[in-house]
Length: 222
Image (tube, rainbow, N blue to C red):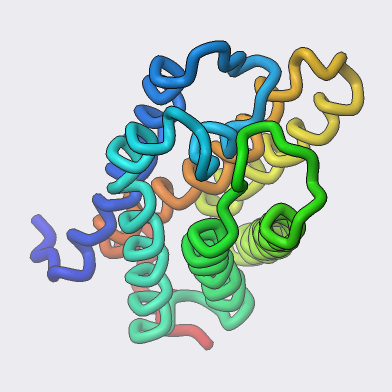
């Protein structure tokens, strides 16, 4: 049985972060009279003036901190152990940066009011953060997919990255193809993609990436 180090155990925070985010999405609308999850964005629940803001902050506490800690520990682990190729590690680093931008950016520029038009500086910056998060997510996942195709020991991570990327694209495609009444449904595909993939990386970190070790020390390849 593997002798797990503390950094490996931090991988479990990815799973806890996913559970925390799911709980916030499911239960926060109870504190928001009139909120329609099928039509409204998830970010409306955490808007500064939203009646559900306090409950959202409570339920998403592990998500806010756990996602960043998990992703950072994954980045540190793959860097220190020279896991696989530079391409793979670059994908992990970009995914980690995305998590930090999401954590810091959305706290600094939370929507001032649920469903408010994008007009003020706060709302504009919120959208800028969103664009950065989406672009970094897409780029990092594509890199990880390519890394998985090139290295059979990373095939699993590449497959999960492809699933996450597919979910991410289902959001805008669904928003364009279906009436606005279903905006919230497809928006959640995009938001769950990154959180879910972070949980996957957390599981691999907990396992010490041992699945990808081979007799020829593939993980030590640069």
